[in-house]
Length: 389
Ligand SMILES: *[C@@H]1O[C@H](CO)[C@@H](O)[C@H](O)[C@H]1NC(C)=O
Ligand SMILES: *[C@@H]1O[C@H](CO)[C@@H](O)[C@H](O)[C@H]1NC(C)=O
Ligand SMILES: *[C@@H]1O[C@H](CO)[C@@H](O)[C@H](O)[C@H]1NC(C)=O
Ligand SMILES: *[C@@H]1O[C@H](CO)[C@@H](O)[C@H](O)[C@H]1NC(C)=O
Ligand SMILES: *[C@@H]1O[C@H](CO)[C@@H](O)[C@H](O)[C@H]1NC(C)=O
Image (cartoon, rainbow, N blue to C red):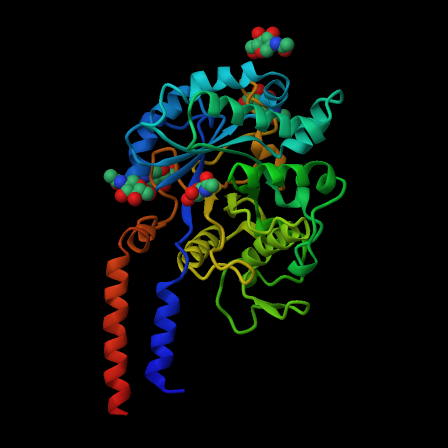
């Protein structure tokens, strides 16, 4: 084929590529010894962070994002799941205090009813059936939002990868765990389709890497290297990083449940710094920079061209949890393998531990004309070079 036409074809593919993934951060406003939201929000704005996931949000925290144009994913603490499920008025009450006074000046995109809710409901409330309580809670919250005339805020819940998946390799063999799959996920995926919502998943290549010594560190850290790949022999697809492999496992498992088109949001991903042999050096920085570069490339994953729609870095500040809960708020850190490590990207004095450039996503996102112009010039330049040859 003629060289310029190959370039032209490549350009056309690029121009039609899906939108870049929105990259946000997870912010637990209950973290002890960090500044209040009204001081944190301006720091987030100056970093050009466009999306924030709030764990256990207080009404004041939701209010402090008003007029910022930062979109919020609110995560309702797990201890409210059972009351939302039992009773619409509990969901109403929560919306009256956390959402109604601030919507739409604060941009709320989605509310997650709990996080790792299945495990938590099953272990905390022996009298409740986790297969119905989670979906009932989501349905009630959804109906309450509709009754308030709010149609722009979606409802979902957050799962963790290890909790619902059987395997991450090869992705084509991945399925949701039983009995979670038939009892909980199938009806829940149906709800997500009907309400145009997304599947939310906490996804840590770090944990899979730790548990599988044969995985090269570079494969987990998005390092480009000729030897960093794994082939899925069933689909013939080549994976160049662990993150894509895990995302495609989720997508393949949804396909087994006949719901492969539900958008996927990665609600947590990250890499701890310090305190542990696998977390030494600048792996945290390498992982997050590699992740952001990869998500901005608009290449998606092998099984889904548009990739994940949003991804939230875990987390903004180190939380010094040790397994205790504060104010009845659910302690997410203690649930994680490697609790007690430092996952934060920002010090309490609001400076970053290392530089992450959140603004670059707006270059591609918000200014496609610039991109087109750059590409057209590049094409013209390559064309003239190829004519000379
Ligand atoms: C607000 O954010 C949206 C989407 O992220 C963007 O399109 C819009 O230009 C932003 N508006 C302002 C005033 O920054
Ligand atoms: C429903 O919730 C409200 C407020 O949380 C509570 O006062 C009421 O007793 C609950 N009703 C039932 C039947 O649980
Ligand atoms: C579903 O959501 C997307 C974006 O979140 C929106 O563009 C689309 O119009 C929605 N579709 C329906 C049927 O509500
Ligand atoms: C965990 O932290 C809480 C509050 O900071 C403290 O009261 C408790 O003693 C700690 N528990 C352990 C086992 O260190
Ligand atoms: C912020 O805190 C970190 C860690 O304590 C420290 O290394 C850094 O110098 C501080 N930066 C400023 C501007 O105070």
